[in-house]
Structure formats: structure tokens, C-alpha cells
Length: 101
Length: 335
Image 1 (cartoon, rainbow over the protein chains, first blue to last red):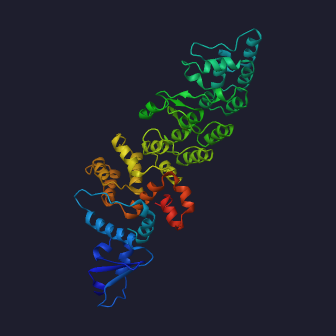
Image 2: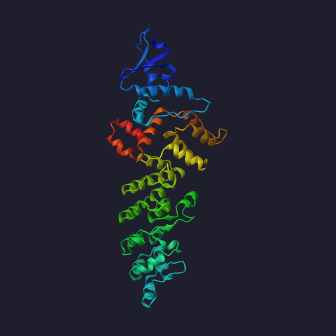
Image 3: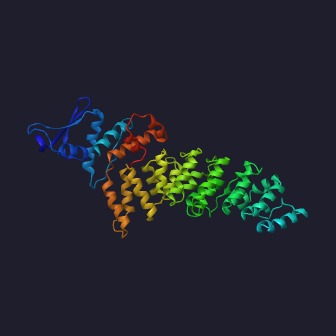
């Protein structure tokens, strides 16, 4: 809870909430700036990030990517290809540019 | 013929007056006209064009064993005689003779043996771009404009002909000049998607990549060429084009910058950039490589979008409701 929370809640345009570990969220420079800055989050509230410009199916892929990125960066194991559904690619490139990840 | 080569107009006139036959050719099918063109004697060319029969020119130029003499235009280009070239174009030889290609032998594609096997014919436009870029410098644009405005084709019909867009991509360096030539060719309708060598990548893009012509690759991608960095890199790796020349190192860096999504390709590159190498540039690239190993989501998506639209990307960009900065990103205007 509060600024030192372990988890971050991401809210989408269609009302879904994604709760991911803070270290995964911080793989995006934009998320990192949003949750690391002078936060107004009260001590007993969860850390929230407003992504209401984007739909949940896009944000779900973003969350999966962030975990993929943290897991495989500097990894010595073989890295699998991260799949992108072509019909989602245009929406996804928009959010990826915004999140800078 | 000797008089024609040395440009002695008086002697040529005198010989013709005394019955010398301008339609005769030497054993290599070279006529007096050929020699006068190649040595750039405008007045002699003018005279010989009047007296030489078109049928004789046609017969000798198209003889299966004729080599250098096949294309009169290429002779004028080879000698760098713009006035002779213009004279030929304004003559009544007709487009069939003027547009005749030359054979691409080893000497034309000496640095590109793998392409010499693929293309065996070279049109005057391709000949100009292939052989004269370094010699003519900015003047090449004048030659190119003259040829294109006369209606020389910018595309090829046969698989064995070297397309002009491929010819211009084969030489790294002269970035600005290449870019101007490409713009001119595209304005005349050159096909950037012409594909014969590798089914995933259009020939011009592949040629630029193999030659280490980074700015050419970027220019073609920006105007909508459908090749993807993964496919280019895979071609370079599997066909053994990776060497430690600065051009090729820059090419690999560019491809990585554009986004290589297939993780298996990185491990191939790690063998290419040996960590123990004493070359600073190679070491820098190896470090650069490590940080890029997990492709960013932006680049993954950009490639997915480009794969989705293929060569229709540029027209699609006009229609799509996406912000301007995103369009620039997708068309590689911003990397």
C-alpha cells in the first residue's frame, strides 16, 4: 500500500484492473515515472495507474510483455519470440510508444 | 574505321566519297559508328548516323556474339559523352536499338559475384548507375534525366535483367547522390517491390543490404518497401555476407535499430561479433547487441504493423486515424 507498494493497479477504458508487480511495471519508463514521482497515493491506498485511454485486451498484452521483458533481460536461457497478434498491432504500437517500452 | 575512331571528319568524308562502306563491321561486330561514339567525336557520329543503314546497325548490335558493341547508348555513357548520347537519342535509330542492353560480364559486377550470376543483362539506365556513379558525381543526374525523359524503362521484364533500382543500390558511399537517383527513378514509376532473388525481400532492398548501403536501406523502407529487418538479417547470415567491414557493421547496427524480433538471430550475431576482437567498433556493437537482445514492444509492434500492411503501408498511413508522430515511427522517419 501507498508509495512503497509492491503491486501496481492499472485501469483500462473498459473498467478492467490489472494488478502487476511493481518491478514489472517499472520496465516501462512511463510507468516508472508515473509511480516513482511525487505520489499523492495515501499510505493505505493501492498504487494506481490510469490507462483509461486504452482497452483491456491491449493492456493485457502490455502486462505480459513487461513480465517477458524483465524475465529475459540479461537471461542466459534461450529467449522465445514474443508473439504479437497482427490485428492488435496498430493499437499496441500506440500504447507501446506512450509507455516507451 | 581508324579515321572514325580518331575523329578525323575530313578523312571520314573523303573515304565515304570514295566508296568506303559504313555498314561493314570488324570481326567483333564493331562498326565505324561504334568507334566514333566510344571516342566521343560528335561531328563524325553525326555524319555516320546519316550514312549508316539502320538495318546494318540492328544486325550487328543484336548479333548473339556481339559484346561491347551491343548498346550504342552504353558506349556513349561509358565514354561520358553527353552530347553524343543526346545526338543518339534524337536520331532515327528507334527505341529498339537505343534500349538494347549490354551483357553483364564479370567486369561490371566484379565486387558482387553473387549478383553477377543472377543478372546477365544491363540496360543503358542500369549501366549508367552501375558504372558511373563514382566518376560522374552530380552529373549523373543530368544523364539519368536525359535517359528517363526519353522514355528508357525504369523497370525490367526479364529475370536476367538488372533493374536500375538494384544497380544504384550496389554502391555504398555517395549517399546523397544515390538518394537523388532513387527519387528520380521512383518518380518515373520504378517498382520497389520487384522480387526475384529472395521471396521475402524485394531485390532493391536486398541489394542495398548486401552492399552495406545503410542509407539506401532506410530510404527504401521509408518509401514503403515491404522487406523486414529479420528477413534481411537472416539473408545476410545464411548467405555469408557478414564481414567485418565498416559498411557491414553499420548495416547490422541499422537492422538492430529497426528491430530484430527473432531471438535466434541474436545468437548468430554473437558469433559474428566476437567479444575478444580487438576492433573497437566490433566490441561496441557486441555491447550494443546485449542491450537489445529483448526487442522492445514498440519495435515488435512496428514490425507487426509493417508485416500486416506490407507494401500497402504508405497508402494505408494516409487513411489511418493515428497520430502524426506514430506515422513517422511506423514509416521509419523516426527510429
